Length: 457
Image (cartoon, rainbow, N blue to C red; front, top):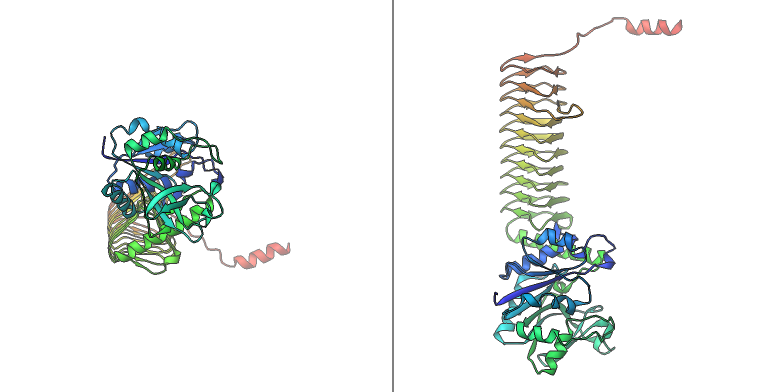
């Protein structure tokens, strides 16, 4: 058993969220609340914390079982009851860190300072606190000098106690043996009829134990998510942190107010993000790339010095020095090599576009392989779906596909081949060949006069 063990409480239903989804599974900056708390625990050196699950436990456990030890709280009888469920797992643990799964704004620096104070001063318990001008709803911290005397919940507090500005964040360090003993002595004698974890502090006080507080300088860390409104508030705070981090690392963000970057996104130095851009999931943007304006990328890789503007892309790879947009749509499976141009009103799906190729405008490329330096004329369509199955199209190197060409898959166009504008290609075209498929043009002179004469009869 490690000396330091983390317990994360994630069993609550979150009634005020008005959702069938467990509260800790609601997303913030692109991933569930519980994963943000797991990330912080990992950053302070706890690789596999104990996570207490209850409501919707199958959903929560399925998401985090590779990162945590799952403990089930069958009945939700309060925070103290929740921690009781992990007692069999705490044998030999010297320090127990208790976290809440709905507090995504905790900082690793605060937890490290809390743990250090607790262990250096050999406290029985140490509470992470914060000071708030409007502390309504939070448990208040009552102290005698520097020593913690009691934590009183909002519903149980007297009017004078409610005037206290220092609040309980719900994050604690305990001496493992003392916590186990105190949990056997707490009762249901409170307004909620639940086992409060904070009741253990009354037990410690009676025993004359040393209890301390560490006050964080950022009161946002105390924000727990109990409603959609609080989720939106936390989202704004967290995203502001993300933007500040990237700007400090050398990324230009022209308008932070209209820029949204998920927690897992990675940006290189000298990337420029233009207004009204959203970067989601595991997106990676490399040096000197310019993204936006009005661009949405999800799980995409963008190469060095590429420009992506007015574009929607998902699960796509964009190589170095590419130009994408405006008004392009890159669907899953799209892969662009270096120096590719994808222009306006172009949709590409599940296709490989090799180096130097151009799809300038008004085209659909699906289930295709486009060779090096090929030029795809305006209005070209790969007809890849026959109503039942998808079929591939292969376009060779240095080909020239004329405007408004229909390529009926499965079909192959050889290297250096040319198709005439307006052709519907249904057969393979050999290398260096010209393929033209059109009906013969018919001109009827004096047709307008004939039409008038017919109308008069």
